[in-house]
Figure 1 (cartoon, rainbow, N blue to C red):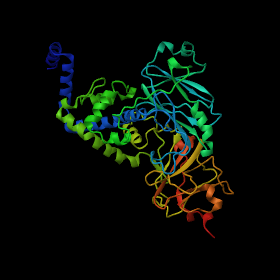
Figure 2: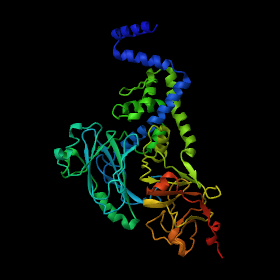
Figure 3: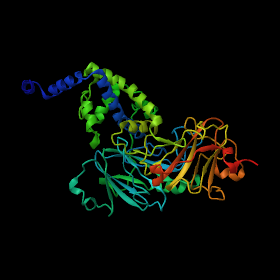
Figure 4: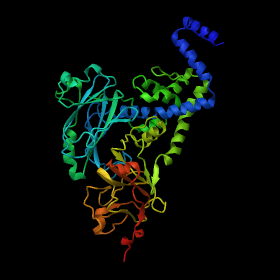
Length: 490
């Protein structure tokens, strides 16, 4: 029977065009799937493509605005700098940090490599994480990895000129010591962060931002002009990328994914999921025609967005280990391997996550009694002198309202950070206060004003030490103020 089948197949190849044979094979494969099998593959495929689709929508939005707006958006191959912290009433970004100023650049390597010039930061902490179109951080120049001296980076597209790998400096007259960085995808997002010690530090940080440069390799060393942006009015600039992606139909989602796969290479370990996608008729390098798909496949693709998003929502509470009512998401962050479910969740909830070695973000879930934080109570976070957050860079705690926005207050303070002049206890321990009313003038240096209603806390450790990454150290519980003996009013 096998030999007869192969003979028939060979005969068909001579009669039918190769494309028709491929279509016949795909249809046969799809028809062999049960509805349950097709649903499972489509759901996994949705999770796999979620980050890529989100990055594409984000890229189209952020590069569709002229430079100089003081935000993340602007032309590609140009640093677009955020020059101050968000204002008290700014709700454009959920859970913004008040530790760093951002410098964002979308690199387009489709025509040629780019050269990035980084000035000396004189020891100041900074980070230039580079995300590929799958949201993996594949390079992270900065304070932790490459130091703070001036440096030059040559970022090249996949498989660029292997004949020049050992002599690119001489060939293009680049400075000695230029670092060659190979990007896995032809588009790259740099989400730079520079440590900023409050508004009085803006001017110094803005100067560093102004000296960050991107140049196409052929124009390196020349005077650069801001690239012109021809605004595409057909691009939805109002709806956030997350909302756009989450509201896509399965048809639209998978059709767009197939087009992106024509130019965006998958990772080396993605072969298994791509092979499963072929069972649905979605092949790398080819467009996907939903209308011509088998009814079983159509139904699976229509069902995938709802099924995948329900799975994502279900998994969130157990995505990270929880210690002392703090969610400690320190594993497989920034580089996800084949953990596509986690990659999709992180993309949906916090696009642009760093590698854990660069920063971790303990998130508070409740007080020591397991109850969510509320401004009707007074809270204290107590660190023994030997248990302060272990960070090689620095650390902070930021307070947000229930929706994830900063809380306007009389101090105009939204975070407490290790650079601040805290009032330490006589034994070297530290108490941080989170409450609506002042804890007293002698304690206000350690106070974050809270709203009268629900709120939550996010801790940030930049360049965390091993103890924080391995779980040997975890934040202490947040306690009611009268739960600590030395704080009881006499």
